[in-house]
Amino acid sequence: MALRKDAQRNRERLVEAARAVFAERGLDVALDEVARRAGVSIGTLYNRFPQRADLVAAVFADRAETVVRLAEHALSMEDAWSGFVHFVEQVCRMQAADRGYNDLSARSIPQAAPTAGHLRGHELMTRIVDRARDSGDLRPDFELSDMAFVTWSITRTIEATGDVRPDAWRRHLGFVLDGLRASAAHPLPVPALGPDEIGQIMRDC
Image 1 (cartoon, rainbow, N blue to C red):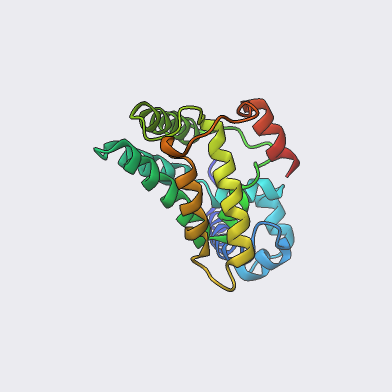
Image 2: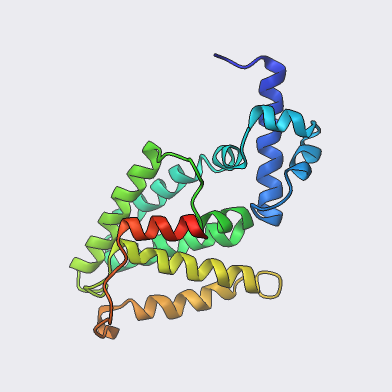
């Protein structure tokens, strides 16, 4: 059922305000601030978005499509390692530009079901990893689930250094990427995390 025009305007204002507030202050900001920025009551906010997760999902609904476009571009690059590096760098750049998205990258959204965009992104990221590994450039024991370590580590660097050196994450990522090269690989002491383990960790964050 379509929303009334005034209800739709309120929803749009809330999403716009939340996008700005989350980008500035992260996902844990008081929702009263979002309502105030949108010029509506907190009751109106909860009428439109009964749970914080609903608002977060609405704000970042387009990010899955952005990741898909980045992945498609990475796969179009002739060199598999360059495509892998480009994809990782651009995702980290998105995190660095938006504190809310940086927070989101380190956790899951409770009760949010995967969208078609998320599923497509997962498929393309699998191809990016497989292609870089098959080329001999990416260490052979790197799995898609290991990408979480890259994401989580960079989110923490962005949090710690953003106010002092906003681009410090790029140096950190440079160290990480060099460590992922096949030429630098040494045997690892434990296997990669499984999908269920990744999900449990993110729920507990």
